[in-house]
Length: 297
Ligand code: G4P
Image (tube, rainbow, N blue to C red):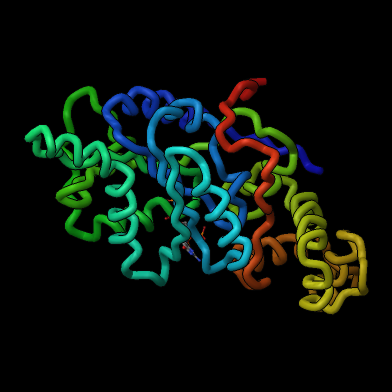
């Protein structure tokens, strides 16, 4: 598998700012891509916010396998102090309300106690975090709409992390998309790249396409063969040749242009043109609660 790493300086800067800001945060809204719910889990976030209640949002469910999404929601909800919602941010106009309600539910006990002591609970403060391209801006628009009031800029407060008064009961801290310095394994990097959360310019897209074809063939046998009219059991390079032939991507001498076929395949995958696919299944053996022991090279 191709080895991918992408952790530019601006992400490390954002990570430091997020750690600092977490002190003022009641809960974390962690966005993950429903097509890769494990690979899109940021272990740094878990390490930074391990004691905070967590609402996991599985985004882009319209492109994920519905049965796998159900399985993931059940699995993630079984974690302590964690709630999970699967959301279609593009089509479900009510998902903003659902997210707010779920966030408040996570804090309900604490708020009830405050009320019992005669204290009027202040708005819940939630940090929204996730990998690049996971749908964070779309979610914030869904929650806060156009009436969002940005917290006034204060000197010394960075602009990259901004408090939004999303609702009378919920303040939302927006953060930039961040990854982490060292992926657990090569598969994690490939999955993140496959869905488009890693800058394409640093990638060998043909290698990435072949890795992804292999993963899809394992989970959805015959699917790609059917779509691209390829021979049964063809290897990933053969699949690229079949894609090139079907889509008339040929070099000057009529040979299949597998590089262009790789680009086309990745574009189709990322836009959900290959059907609703989830590229990972929950691993009951592997604890979600683990921290990030070995993230640096
Ligand atoms: P970010 O802030 O986390 O970086 O993500 P953002 O909201 O900008 O969303 C990234 C892309 O994903 C956008 O497409 C957006 O429309 C799309 N998107 C967000 N949520 C969903 C969802 O639930 N379902 C689907 N199908 N798409 C979603 P884009 O601007 O066209 O970017 P790109 O996909 O061409 O990179």
